[in-house]
Image (cartoon, rainbow, N blue to C red):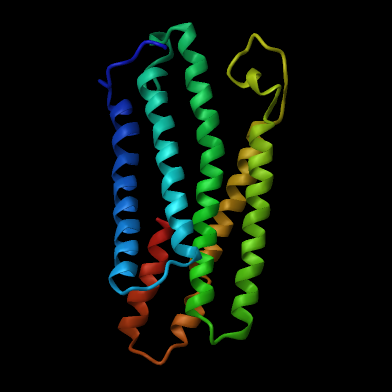
Length: 217
């Protein structure tokens, strides 16, 4: 096992604390969601299970971040690292990349499943949601496959002594990231026309719209 680092820099502490705070909020939200279902004696639906799955995957991402910081020295200057610790960082970063793509896709599909239940009165809405689900699945498939084949053989990603073939990571990250952002914006703004078409107070429309748009932050 590689030697551990003291978490004594602001960068290291931020890398551990910031994700932990958001992960705690996510865990509380999922817990309250399941508790509400149980209290009302309602059966769990696809979006509930998908939220739980994404939470578990998020814990996996955070575990990899801990490995990066504690055993890989992420957040410290490169001169403080030992040669044997470099592979630890890249192995953990590789696992984060794989888990991240799966986590965000699971969340997106969960939201779309929720939409299909809420806006059932609009005929074209379900078809649009299903089309968006297919698009998300295609994005996940392409991102997942490309990530695990970033380097061939895979070991060359964290071991420079092994010769391998590499894709253009810059182009891949930009293309994948832009499409992901587009999907996020589309999913979070998709219900707004239906919300503003409801026969209710403007203040209610603003409140509900804000609840959806807060996800853009």
